[in-house]
Image (cartoon, rainbow, N blue to C red; front, side, top):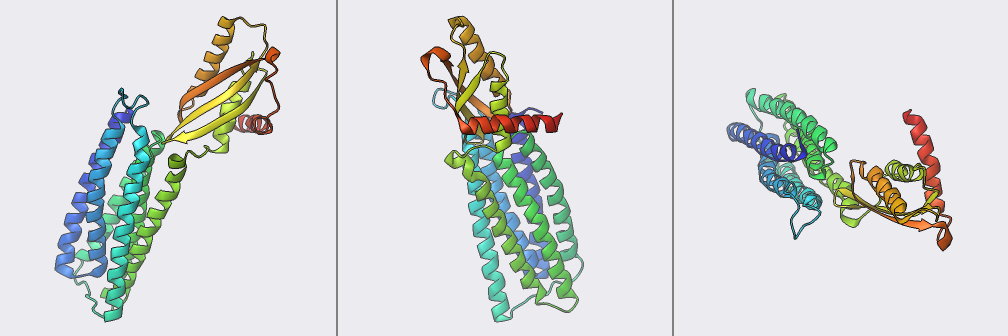
Length: 312
């Protein structure tokens, strides 16, 4: 499945799954009065809202380049992820406030019957399957928004489990476990929001990619038979994609055509890295005296040999 179809399908599936869960949880909440189930229902209702935004955002990010956005629209994805995080913070705070209020006032409703347990078990299983689905597609297609959706669903699995413990404990004669479980749900929700913000910071502030990827960039340049060295290597995130610029050192007796072919070959080698978008290569002939020592580039070149040996 190509990236465009995969991204758009995730948004629609997320919306459908969350609509189903908010309906089932809402019915059980209305019948049982369980705070833990109610917290889960509110969580799923918020999931429906952000699923609409995610579906719209993923549709926009998969639009082809145009005159106003010549590099495409993928750079919108981190902002979609941050929106998910904001929604998560609001929902987590609301649930925490309700659980604290219930504990302080002593107004605790105990769920009766098997439906509260059944719906939470169903929700946990559904969210686990959707978490695995989103994580696989997000990693395959390098999508921060889809990975953020996966992490939200992973935490939904944990919070559904906590709510399940609370409901079961309340039915067993320990009603205080119900609002305590709701508080655990809230903490898990807020934690997932923090994790999403942290994961997207590098995309938003232009951070450097992981060291192994930078080693791969240097390795692909330095192993070209006509490249004698590299320096001033800069790789940074622009949205979820990476822009690379570097200087390559070559002998000065190459013709202009040969130098152009060397540069083009190095560009294509680096651009073959899935995460890389744009590559800018400057050719430095020996005679211009622009060759220079670059400790960081040398370090990455040495490490790239280790990574290469480890993969072979």
